Amino acid sequence: MSAEPQHPHTREVFYRRDRRSVRLARDFTREALTDWAVAERSDDVLLCVSELATNALLHGVPPGRGFGLRLALDGDGVLRVELHDSGPGAVRIPDPSPESEHGRGLLLVSVLADKWGVGERDPGKFVWCEFGVRN
Image (cartoon, rainbow, N blue to C red):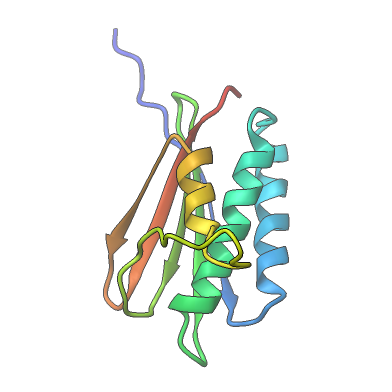
């Protein structure tokens, strides 16, 4: 007898281009983590959501548009965060000077997440990161 495949818990939401959207994305994520009983690494996840949402607003969301946030927790305890935007451009980790007040968001994501990357979509792109969590 084979076990049925476990389907991930998923949640998706869309936000308009508005500075309040970063807080709303963080709150949405916090609620999902609570509902899924994920406490491990929640601070890291919330910080990465904030950084990715901020980057989407600053660099990836053209006027009049927004960004999508997708969260998925699979049966193996891997939490995937995706930020989808419709803006052009490549995503890279900048090399900010020590005095710079900007440019560290993706660097934080690369350090805190187990994996991260960028995917293409039409139009735009999505930036994702994954965390091993125990639920």
